[in-house]
Image 1: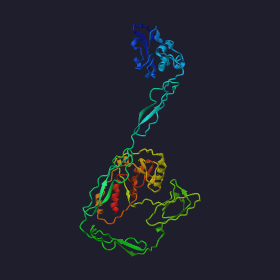
Image 2: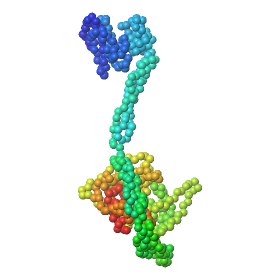
Image 3: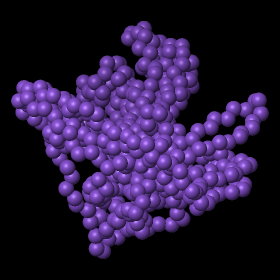
Amino acid sequence: MCNSTAVCSTGQSCFVQTTQTSPAIRYEMGCQNNQLCTSSNLHGGAGIIGRALNTRQVTACHECCLSDNCNERLCAHRKPTACIDSASVDCALLNSLLNVCTDVDHAKTICPKYCGLCSLVDGNWADWSTWSQCDVTCESGTQLRTRTCTNPAPNNGGLDCVGSANQTKVCVKELCPVHGGWSTWTSWGSCSVSCDAGLATRRRNCNNPKPDRFGDHCFGDSFEARICMQRPCAGKDGGWSEWSSWGVCEEGQLGRNRSCNNPEPSVSGKQCAGTDMQTKPCSLQKCYSRGDMVYFIAHSYEMSQAHYLICPTVVDNVGNGYHSNNGSFVAPVSGQYSFSAQICTSDTKTLDVQIRDGIGHAKGFKTPLTLKDDVTPKFMKARSVPFSMKSKIEKELNNLEREGKFTKVNTSEWATPIVSVFKSTGDVMIKGYFKVTVNQALKVDKYPLPRVDDIFANLSQGQKFTKLDSRQAYLHFEVDDSKEVLTINTLYRYNRSLYGIASFPAIWQRTMDTIF
């Protein structure tokens, strides 16, 4: 409440200035020079009375008058829809002198009825919507909220809302995983020999970038080799090695062989004369006892969760090779096996039958894992996986359990997160990310691995090559009682050695050197 009265001097006028200081409005009243009685004094806009055009959305006002106690009525205009002209002015006189009705933004405030602006509605913003979800799942993203010019909406020539209908802010999530990428190949190295044919190699590294924060490792080979031809060596004829011992009797014959490597012939030398293999007849007759036989007879059928056919009713199972709990057959002794089955189905059904080889088992070898002293077990939480992969992961886990690679457990002090990727066949490959658990706690086994250059040097004079592929090599070795540390966070435990454990390359190489 303002109770003071001021008398303005010559050249001055009464004024009122209001400013929005949300949620209240600040009033300033008094006398000022007549030259300041213009809306440009407040906002820099053009006009004769009231607010500037560029701030019509702002609750602010600067108006002047000259009659006694006149400023109590200033800056208190009704909306145009009230259709009441201001009693403090003569609208007809203002329009005849200053053409005020053409200045709609001011005329609607003081002379809406005279100027025919009673139906005019200026637009005003509605409340902001709630913030949207962050548009990324990791790193930095953006959130958005909006508002509409509907409180009220502009109508009958009214002004649109001023300002933006959208507002954004930054949202920050956890760091994204970094997937490994290959560097460019190095240049080809020098040839492994100085004459005749040899091998040259080149390499690349998984550091562009290095995998981090549970990102996928690089897939593929880190080195390549190609044949290189040097100048011909001095002519050297080949010579035979000693004959090997006679092999096992197969199909009525024994066999033995020798190699043309004593010495190996150079490019310009002569090959060995004669044959590299000899055979002689042998007898296959043998008296078999029941203990030498392996066979099973089973009937009926069930379908496992992994969609494998199971014959649960076992009539005979000599050698205990058939497992009716999961429908698998594991050969108890080496040899050639034959299988036959009779499967009946209706005309409207299709049955797809497959027989798959399992992974070999190196008998007499168990892989030990030695932990550092005073190691605390690590149990890592499971990572989220895309919904499209869940059924494939469950199927693959069932397959691995059926093949004996995994065992389902109820509890474990150790748990390693898994990394799941699609293979070219559409199936899923499951790998444990042991870098963050077991490998940090291991006393890593050491054994000298053969250098690639040494291997290539040994092969450089070869004429015939054989590739022996031990499929999924590490899985041939069973792990000893230390295998609890190989539990993954789906509570499956590896029974066999596997890629990704720091000690297994040395253990594998030592065992191969022992066998061969």
